[in-house]
Amino acid sequence: MALTISPRARRVLKILIILIIFSLLLDFIRRLYNFSNLFGFFKGHSGIVLTQQDILDDYNARQGQNDTGAVPVIPKILHQVFHNWTDPENPVITLPEDWERARQSCIALNPDWEYKLWTAKNSRDFIEEEFSWFLETYDNYKFPIQRVDVIRYFALRHFGGIYIDLDNGCKESLEPITYFPAFTTDGGHGTLSNNIIGGQPGHPFFYLLTESLMAWNWNWILPYVIVSYTSGQWFVTAMWEKYHALLSNGSVRGFDGVGWKPLHHILMDTRPDQPDPFVFWNQEHGGSWDNWDSPWFGWIGSHIGLVIKWVVGVIVLVVLLIASCVWCCKCWAARRRRKNGYKKVETNDVIV
Image: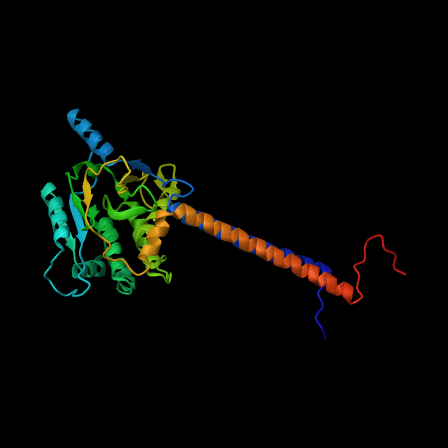
């Protein structure tokens, strides 16, 4: 016996299909909007943006006025990470010459700071001892750079301080930076950066970072996307925006304590036409984790506006093509019915 569907049920089914497609399209648009905002496409990054010169000028002004109201909150601990991927058990640490020069500049300009160099061994030992719930994820990361990324978040959550990539050196004392509860750096275009990041121990932003790592540990196929979205700059920017979305009446939902405020991102724009100079840091050669797809995404990051426009254009084109196909199918079905001797009954037709 053939299954027959009443006209009313057919209409309901069509409406349900349209609603499902519309909901999926809205969800895709929402995700595309949020992803675009990782690069500041539709709106700038949340929080308070500062230039390095602003920070130094404000600090010097307070020192000149003997202002004792502002209290440093970041402990004087400098974190850096060097994982010897070729020989992780080797206790001898040999850095490239320019990295060693950059490292020594930070140590020399901050002589009263504690210095922590995180190696592959002591990083894993630290995770095993203090955050054993994360050890399996840490060990199973696909790329070693992911472990380099996440150890800085856990170190800052536990100890506080300032983390600096080894390809960044220091030009000034970091004392003026210690007045910000949590901060990261901002290249001025694209996502926020995780090459220099710091804050006080136990800050909810670092909790949000570390507690979200397991849920964000997806296999995105492409190496650059995997690293960026599971532990790197895209991930940090997504958590940064989520943190500010959680701010409500001066507090962060889900964390103990009140009075948490918007975070600071410090400009560190390397483009040659930018007017804001580097005051606290400089830049040596980096890219130690670059993979085969890194040049592609480097280009995409520099042309994100064009890429988003192309993606939107393709989506609109696909929707129009689908709508055209549906319309053509309906027309073909109507012609076939007429050819077979069927004719749609109009309201004013008389059936004899």
